[in-house]
Length: 74
Image (cartoon, rainbow, N blue to C red; front, side, top):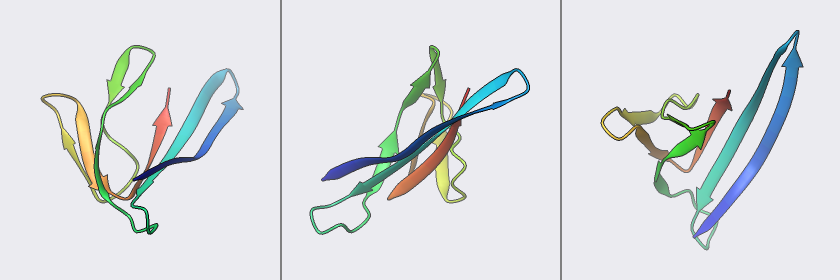
């Protein structure tokens, strides 16, 4: 399995700072794999990626998707 952080970019708009995280998970042949993720930022668990095809799980604040996800971090 390959876990790759594709991009972690930061930007400042006025006084608001934000970041975007892009993660890709693939097998040894570079084929996308299903994944379940727990993402935490500033002590808060984030579970709603920007990816259109994802399933959020409110109970444990995680989500599942296939191969890659993009998420805005506070």
